[in-house]
Amino acid sequence: MKDTYEVPSMMTKEDVTMMILSAKKQAGLTWEGIAASIGMSPVFTHSAAMGMNAFPMDKAEALVTALGLPQEAASVLNEPPTKVWEQAVPTDPCIYRFYEIVGVYGPTLKALIEEKFGTGIMSAIDFDMSVTRVEHPKGDRVKLEMSGKFLGYNSW
Image (cartoon, rainbow, N blue to C red; front, side, top):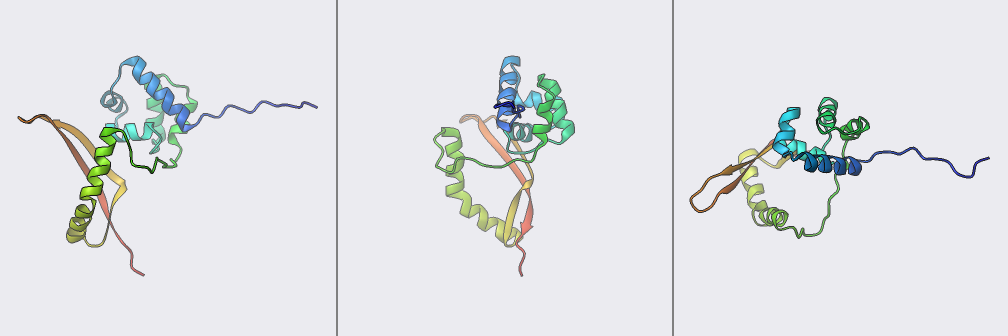
């Protein structure tokens, strides 16, 4: 009887993310270019590539083909995500500014949403987002547009 056995190698979302980032860097690609090649938005493409969303199988297969990844990666990209992120205040300056915006303007946005729609939330599942560059005399601007389905709270 053997004392040891080989465990089949299982690819994780983290493994696939590292493969995607490596292939992107080696090929000199942009997220806009990758997204265009598979027919998806850059925001969703990046989020799903980072493991925070699941690609539909046809898009996962297209991404795997576009980046020359192993076919097994497509099924991993299609798996539902477990959305976990560091809960401490972020230290990356760009990400910290988003944290600061939510801290400063979150209550304002909540109040204005409730005035316009009633008590509820904006969905982050039925959701679109885009990032554009806007020229401005005082320095170019980052324009973020978010659109999420309104979900009213159920009352019992």
